Length: 210
Length: 210
DNA sequence: GTCTATAAGTTGATAGAC
DNA sequence: GTCTATCAACTTATAGAC
Image 1 (tube, each protein chain N blue to C red):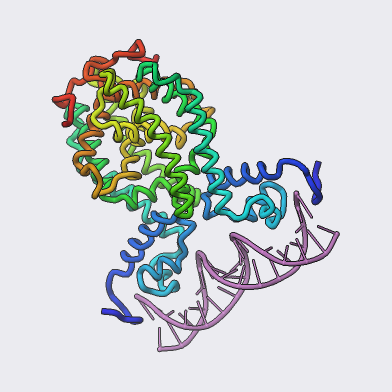
Image 2: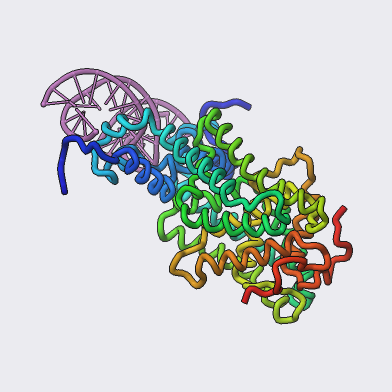
């Protein structure tokens, strides 16, 4: 199946995006050349410009697609605003961890390469990021108003929880000490307590995940 | 005081490091050229090599100094292992937030540019990062053994707390809604609950920071 | 759709003048 | 200590052949 030239009529576009995502995540956008991406795909550098107008668009499209996928995947996974906020929060924690760990490269890109976006592109990605954060913040506010959660500041709790959960992607290894499910259990336990009232657990059963 | 040439006998070295730190934090190591650093300092590119053997050493030295300063500053701020773990944890949370917010560029560098270090340099920085994490982990283990803390996994709680606290540097603005002290109060409130027993607050007074 | 060739500019780093 | 000049290699992106 090795051929030096000729049409594929196939999936060179997606393969370029996949190679770019992997290389950008590993070495950083600025450190990766179009020639390196081309070599990873098995084409010459000039061929890339049949699929992308420039390097910046390649980065933006990867980040934009990731954010759009993230938001619509959560909207599909959200058990719904009629359920108790703690139930929705548990769903959010598990969703965010699983979704992120299955897309470690895209997650990495989306918060490491913001500074390599042009101002216009940056603004568009930021808006999507805020949209996603607002989904969590509205759950926390509902819990606050209903009295099932006690948090000093809904906005800061949102940022704290997302930082805590996303941080998992920097150390998690599939062949490590803990499985993805087990990590999700442990983080849900901690997240639950973070938003709990001063009298502690009022949802989710046992205090231990063991 | 404008001069085009001649000796300073002064602090060009530190100024190069300061300019590099600021530029690396803003645009990323790979995206910043030696000529840009030189221009920020007000010298020609060749002059930089009187102070640093190469660009990589400039990055490594900045990260190394930051990690060394962080660890020795905490060792000086630690109230000591004879105090209750919750007291030490409160000190750690406040220390980490204040120290990080006063050095936003260095913090940014130290976790965004790890992938631009050579393997040897990476290993040295990683060892320092682990040393710092171990300081927190030992506090959590002491709380666990003494029964004043309830956490599902000491290692994961360490990583979760550090991610949560360090995340502040990505959004905090000195002229924003909340002061550094107020942010530290709110995060301590959340951190305290994260490690609390199932019956909630057993230290630190009121459940509210208001 | 992919190649080759190339334009036009930047890069990290060095040598030697002063 | 700093400058100027320079090197070889590399960069993004385009043009035109096939």
